[in-house]
Length: 319
Image (tube, rainbow, N blue to C red; front, side, top):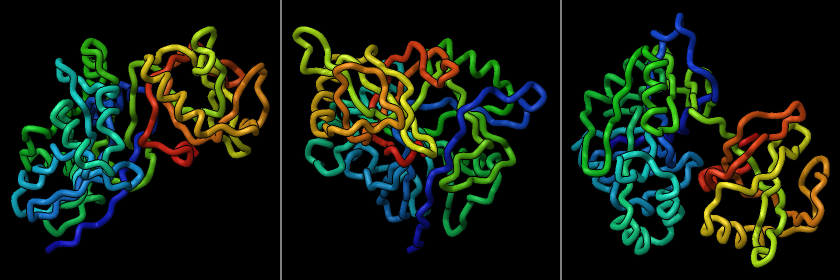
């Protein structure tokens, strides 16, 4: 049996659409709002799923276990994104959150799989049969992937187009999708590298932040978070970038309250203590994604709103 190589995922750099003169040098894929996944298909029908951090998440997604049968006896390493589609087929990260973190509870994972099916959107092939493809350019890897015809009840290979980036981005806006990933046609796969060869273009500005503290709500919500104090890491430590107190659901607030209580500390984790009377500090372990309009000259996020907790990221991933 072929021994499959362990391969860390290549990461995209946030940016803008390539210029019109560079447009034809890139392939464009819809940016999926889910959990990154490297799938190791052994060739004997079994499959191993690893998250971006390398954690084994196979047991969390029993509905993806038949992926190995889609390749028959051909071993492969595939890159993709696990999503939880809504009724219109769009990735819904809030739905997916109920599926994440269940690798240690197979019974619950199986129950949730029946309620909220997962779908693996495949976009790259890194190893096939006996050959590593990481040095093969994107356009050729993409052709190999499409030739595998990986379409099943819980997995697919969404289309990619060459050029026409502006039209593709407008399509994602109209459809309410997150955005695009532009991939240079001549780029190899760079494991573990955040590369300019892959550019993620979002329809809204977002930022990954680290929660360093919180402010209590008012009235009946006095024991719950009314706002979170956000930080982003720099070489000299965690810099305060503002507070966020809108955009979350009641269930988000309740979950955050429990997490923040467990992480309580008496020490402010920011390089400069923010002016925030009544602040309660926490060990900076939680990573979240927020939407915002722009940044001030001091680096603060303007008009931030909560998007999601990033269970797939650790603070080290932001450094």
